[in-house]
Image (cartoon, rainbow, N blue to C red; front, side, top):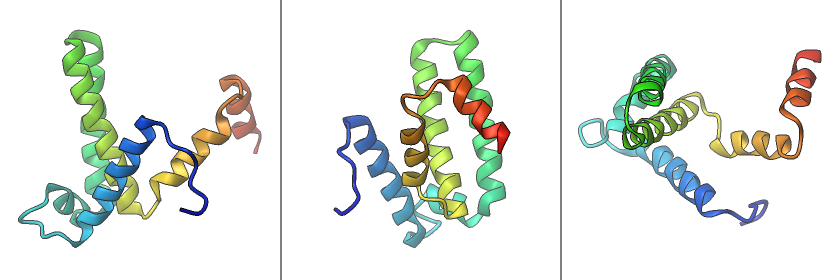
Length: 115
C-alpha cells in the first residue's frame, strides 16, 4: 500500500483493530457491540472511554497485572472506537506519535504550548 510504513507486530494488531472497528459501521446493532457504540455518537463513545480510563487507573493501583492488561486493552479499543465515531483515522494518531519519536517529551510539550 502506498504511504504505509513498515509495521511492527503491535502496529499491525492496532491497524487490524482499527480496520475491524471501521468495518463494524456496516454491521447491525443487534450483532455488533461496536456498532451500538458508534450509533450513540461521539458523546456515548467518549463516556465509555472515560469509564474504561477510570477502570484502567483502578487496575493500575490496586489490581493484578492481568487485570491491568485487560483494562488497558479495553481502553485502547474504546479510544479507537471514539476516533472512528469522530471520523479521525487511527493512522493519523500513529503519525503524530511517529513525529514525536526521538524528541524529548518536555521539548514536545513546550512546542505544543508555544503555538
